[in-house]
Amino acid sequence: SYVLTQPPSLSVAAGQTASITCAGDNIESYSVHWYLQRPGQAPVLVIHYDSDRPSGIPERFSGSNSGNTATLTISKVEAGDEADYYCQVWEGGSDHSIVFGTGTRVAVL
Amino acid sequence: QLQLEESGPGLVKPSETLALSCNVSGDSISSGSSSWGWVRQPPGKGLEWIGSIFSTETAYYNPSLKSRVIISVDTSKNSLSLRLKSVTATDTAVYYCARHLVAAAAPILVDHWGQGTLVTVSS
Image 1 (cartoon, one colour):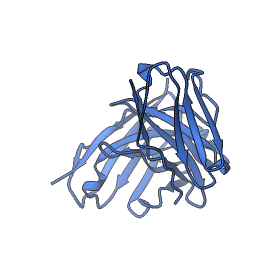
Image 2 (cartoon, chains in turn green, blue):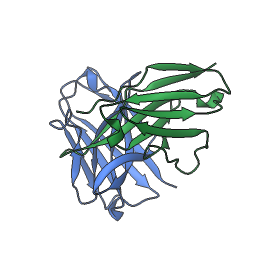
Image 3 (cartoon, helix red, strand yellow):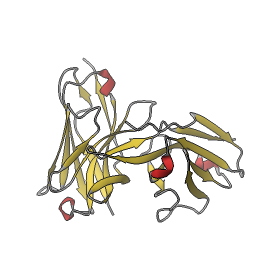
Image 4 (cartoon, helix red, strand yellow):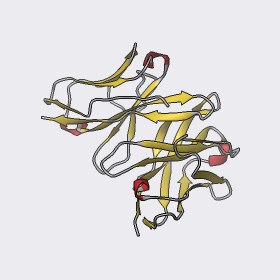
């Protein structure tokens, strides 16, 4: 099955920009979706279809997808952005599988 | 306001069957505009998609779990269920009920999650 690889952790100072990568073979041919999960809570969708923001998600969250890497960018990072972030694609095929990335823990300094 | 509420035993013995239910309020499973399913997360680990089902009872499963999993819907109760047989300690996880956005008759992403329920597999 399709594999999505993310860096395990990332530290960023408050007010700076965080870039979280999601690597997959020819990932640009897939639509990539991103979730954040705060400690003890359910995940929340923050980006869908590579770069679209669901209603209620701040403009500070943006996404891109090119080549073998998709990227979630969080500008002007706040303490409340400290969370685990997961990328996800729909693999298709006969199983119509949904695949999640390995996850990245973002710490705000 | 959409709410997904998971329920079921918090402790299951090895080799037995894990059974969970999810009650849906604020949306109708039978509307056909979404699919419904489950995602799990072992303690301290990442997310794993289990599967998804449409109101037509067409279901899709994670290939790695397919031989052990059944997801079903009860449109009269607006609920769905998960059964995972022959469980081991590696099935210990928080299990989330999940509404899926659909495109071209396939579940594409999760647009709403329940709060999750922890199931521990232990004797």
